[in-house]
Length: 150
Image (cartoon, rainbow, N blue to C red; front, side):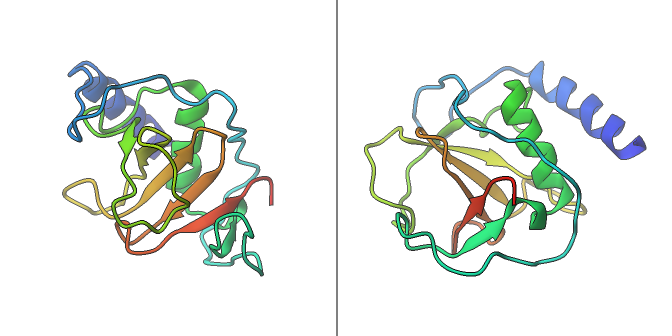
């Protein structure tokens, strides 16, 4: 609870700095079709078996994401404020070409706070315009498709 209050206070301070797009893309609203309800916390690395046929990526259960990812999903659902307003809710260009090919602006990126990191850390949630959710914990070197509600 204390950690959540600290993060919330930090978010409010960061939000006061105003949005800016470090990637050269225009800012836009958070996708509204995303169901980002976190059902419970876990810290283990368990993942769903199998591969998402539409993306070719391995599945990860939403419940297997770290607590901070659940916090980020809740912020996305609420429309912010986000911990890094200059970077969060901005276009993700998929330069690594690991996500399914889409037109520029299709994907939005959001920072997942990494405890102990002096910067944004390597963890991100990427949301597709159709509501699909992707997870990376290694700064875009790999992705997994999030199985919502699992």
